[in-house]
Image 1 (cartoon, helix red, strand yellow):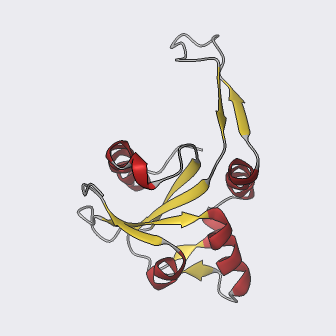
Image 2: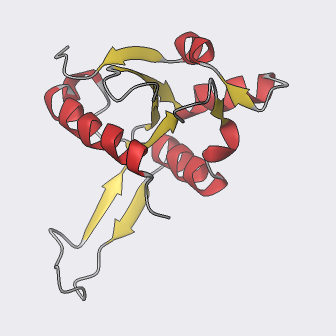
Length: 140
């Protein structure tokens, strides 16, 4: 499924952040980029699909091996990748496009919090409890 436009904007900024702050994360990890939608006050946990959750857990505890096909006309930079060491969710409250604060949450912490709640959504306060608050454009 294609990434939503608002999520894509956050993802682009996040990739640049990760380039300059790689020292604060595991050497190898899989991640998902998520946002709290513009007019919402919380993140609906169903937006993290079972497939995404399974891959993030596998990257943390085992390894995710992906092969890249040479058939496409665009070509690939390599034949495959192996990711292990972590599974993270990067999530931002998309209140305004200028928001710089986001949260880095370990997949297991997310699952444990979700399983302990009766609610179907998490707020920024929940992210502060289980994740790490970070700021785009800042070098740590």
